[in-house]
Image (spheres, one colour):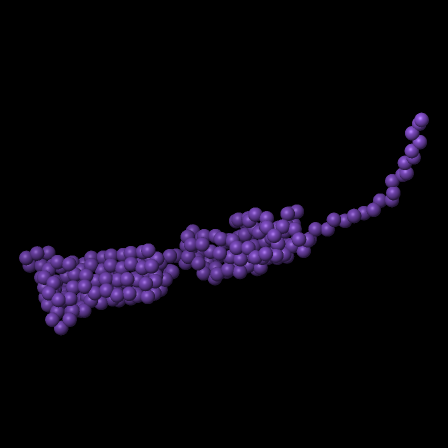
Length: 231
């Protein structure tokens, strides 16, 4: 028996349009300040109206180029992105979102951030005044140094009375200097004229919570209450 099936012609065409919308422009939240080589953490969030997974492209220095790209993730969920700057300066961070089909947003509004050079403590000028020894504790960096532990100590000579002094500077701002002092009591500091042996050595040292340290030596002539010729 012959096959007697009959096939109809194709129906009229029906046009189907597949619509894909780009994500919304991301929001960017983050700090306004940071320190060289320390992590900067920003939080980004964008929603894709079609529910597609999205990824974020970040311009960390405001030059309009993409510096880093995340993996795809669920849209509408805040996401943290971490970056460390290697050079101090002022930067602008911008972010765009892209869905899995390649549609992407414009750049977000810029987030301005200042990256400071790290704290850097040093010992400055050492001077004397009657029965006192003064020393400058300096922070020549931009970021603050915290809990700066300082000490002035006299080594050598005949230490009769006061020969050490110490203290704490809770915060030493970037670019600032604080003078610390060793003061002899009413009987004096000691004796060290350098006549029979080398002059006493004054050692000033400092450390801070940032793991930094500094030290400096000077010599002086000391006779009871009097300190002079510090160099």
